[in-house]
Image (cartoon, rainbow, N blue to C red; front, side):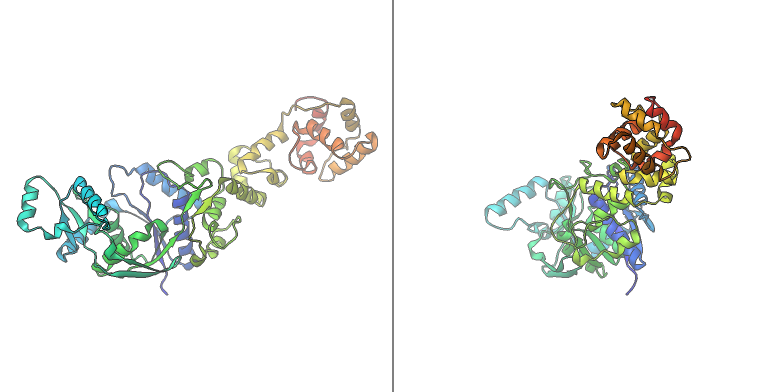
Amino acid sequence: MSKPIVRFAPSPTGHIHIGNTRVALLNALYARREGGTFILRFDDTDLARSKQEYAESIEADLHWLGIAPDVVVRQSERFDLYDAAAERLKAAGRLYPCYETQEELEFRRKRQLARGLPPIYDRAALKLTDEDRAKLEGEGRKPHWRFRLESTNVAWDDLVRGPCHVDCSSLSDPVLVREDGTYLYTLPSVVDDIDLKITHVIRGEDHVTNTAVQIQIFEALGASAPTFAHHSLLITASGEGLSKRLGHLSVKGLRDAGLEPQAVASLAVLVGSAEAVRPVADLNELAKLIDFSHISRAPAKFDESELEHLNARLIHEMPYEAARERLAQLGADEGEAFWNAVRGNLTKVRDAVEWAKIVRGPVTPDIEDKAFIEAATGVLPAAPWDATTWKTWTEAVKAATGMKGKALFMPLRLALTGLDHGPELAALLPLIGPERAKARLAGQAA
């Protein structure tokens, strides 16, 4: 088997959302696992809406996810290929000019529905003579161009959905070229897949209905169709479809929120599959879990609360070396002992900033029972402090005051940190250190 060549083909008309990212990850990780090639193809033929800033944002998102493309191409630089393909289809009689306006087409559609007929294009334009076309163009009409479908049953073996087929006699001949000469998605996509030697088209199931049409275009251009895999779509936790226009769960937004790329990738790839959703810190390991035949056909819910949970689990297991540079950028690098002490209480790496402030101070202590705190201060162990100091101290405080359990531990935590929750004080106390601890126990901000 030859190594796969796959593509992710976003339009740079906005920031990509997590649904787009699911497509990108399945393509990139499949190519990685099989030693293939991952191509980023910008579908930017809509020159008015496509923006360089969005293209740059998409590339930044892919780099952040760890799936930088092997090749980047832009459809806006490939119009010569599309023009040549269109001329071939015209010469073969498969691409023909039509002159109806949208209003005329809508009238025909309603008339067919009223008669109980399927609302497909009636191919009236094929009956036009040269004189008819010349007359219409003389009136100022410009043609749009439709691809003439063969009335056959097109079948393919989908890696996700299994055997699929579409009766093309039930479809309208699709418009491939608009009146102004610009291309709709379909023809450039097929031409690029042929030119770039794409072996697998892995995309959302919303493209299933396009597949039969595209297979016929592949064949009309003398090429074999690639293998298709149409996976289920992601929806929000409330059941809404994702929209780039509305900004639903954009990757940029998730990144700016401080989430880990591995958490985002794990949920995007594993949700809606036979695999249990869990954090997978290594993309190579995540790639091994992809099995197209195990992806459910039902829409999968991408739940932000589940993403937060996965993110926290990744942080709790993250080694200091993986976090050190980011802690330094945040001004919160207090060393490996600090990271190991606080990571179990973090949801995001940037949450460590608050605990670095607790360690460094100043902290305003919360002291209600001064007598108890004075007694505890009186049995405070001498320096140096280590991981055993907390246990030694609290046993001495218990003996001196008779307090135990929450009545013993909570006043000490409030005095030392000003908070009623947080990391184990056995690990935190040596980081706070004797001088700051004594000052706080004395009621001073330190």
